[in-house]
Length: 195
Ligand SMILES: [Zn+2]
Image (cartoon, rainbow, N blue to C red; front, side, top):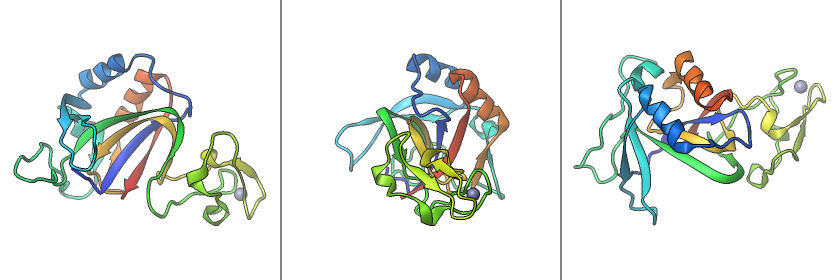
């Protein structure tokens, strides 16, 4: 079950982690975003991960662009790799980390909107509140995590991963972003991940 493309939601607060994860999950379930939990079969991970089936209102909370989404909404027993099975996974870390999104992230200066991709520091070495990027055009200094990442990467310690969504294939509805805000009291953003 090694999906190539995912859509990842993250709060706009590097330090955020839910005070009560079960309560947050329960709220996401009541709202129909996530469904029942299951053990993600995995050949490449040593420990078994817990995943969540999509909830009954998932397709009202995420808008698929184009005519028909090429996703599978239930796991396939027949396929050893799970195919393009769409499920949700919660990732929580002890401290904020850089979560690589697209292989070629697009990011721009929040002040003048110029591309700053070439001025970026080594992202694998990222630590919070420490790496300033100077805009080549307007000279504005911005923390790496505060650049406009345009849905191409993320930073934080709590992530909600929706597996098997292709970049730009789907976008969240306002209803979903409001739901995430109401369960966490934080604003959220999202990005696309590609392997
Ligand atoms: Zn600028």
